[in-house]
Amino acid sequence: MDLFGWIASLPRWQMYAAFLAVAVGRGFAYYLTGALGGARVRGARWFDAQERVRRLGARAVVVTWPVYGLAGATQVAAGAARVGLPGFTAALVTMSAIWAGLQTAVGVVVLEALATRAAPFVLLVILALLVGRLVLDRCRGRREVVTGA
Image (cartoon, rainbow, N blue to C red; front, side, top):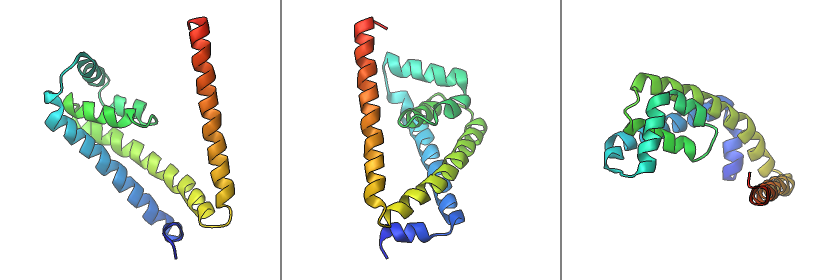
């Protein structure tokens, strides 16, 4: 059995628990990184980010969670800004639980499709979505340059 087939054959609760553990562990690692090393970082942008996170508190974790990259940066800034650990933990576990559920539901479907003969079709759909997104972003960028918006 290949890796995709093995992962897809796991009971759903085990997948969910693994995704949840990874998300919570990653969030605490980001927080700890900010708490231990955030004071060494200098610059106006970093200071502004810390101030925004300090002002929003744990809500910053919830608001930025869906944005890949920004979520991790916010968790690092939360550690540097010394956001309260109880509030941070509540926001992190809540958002991690939602993320783990989505990963389990959607991820299983994709893994099962990749483990079967549907893999080329799934890859074509993903590629078409990515190309469509790039074209939309490029058109929006041109429109902003032309209109000054």
